[in-house]
Length: 275
Image (cartoon, rainbow, N blue to C red; front, side):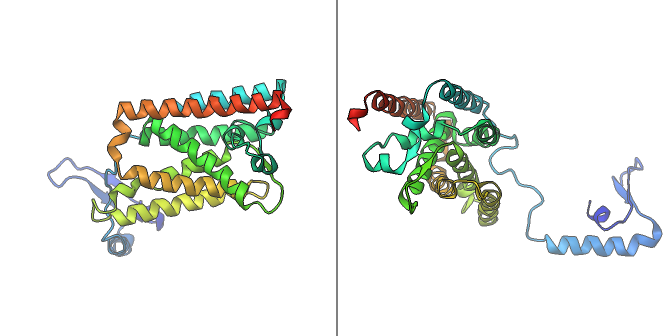
């Protein structure tokens, strides 16, 4: 690959002798090929070719499909009944103690395009989060990160603010993934490089996905930063991801934090006098 990147043609050769595998290179390119390989080795002298970070397999939890299903169900329901006025982030309603909107807004979307963008990216990122941190742990952490994004948008918005959508939770997943290698900081000789590189990659992806002109940048930023914080905290106890009881408790908390806010939101919508 190094030689091909420099336009040097090569043929992989195995003569069947004890000399092993080799590369056949045109004679006129031999000196340039050797110089290219020496330069490549010099530039990568302190960077290992490959290292197993957590597992040689890709850890993906398809339980993220259940989250996508729930998001779709809430969107479908919002086209039949008015869930948006009762559940969106409304800074004036939040100031009147309707805290549940910080949770309910995650399940609402403005249109099919908004839903599709969050569902497709969220399916992938959340699947990796659940695979890394455990199904219950990862789901609750991503959800709390999304709520944190809504809190940031509420507190820092300079004017009355309305918002809805799961993008803060999706950006929280990105933050959780960006800092997942925190546990390697002192465990391997190159741990610091892995951590810094992963966070830098997460920041670049955040810039790509989270700073679109039409996006709720404050909610995205808040979700991403909360994801970084939660992921850093979870990395101190990596065994938690494999602890069935912890995952069960976190899963139950997630269910409660979905049902209770919606119960309060719908109760308030049916009785305006409570506001």
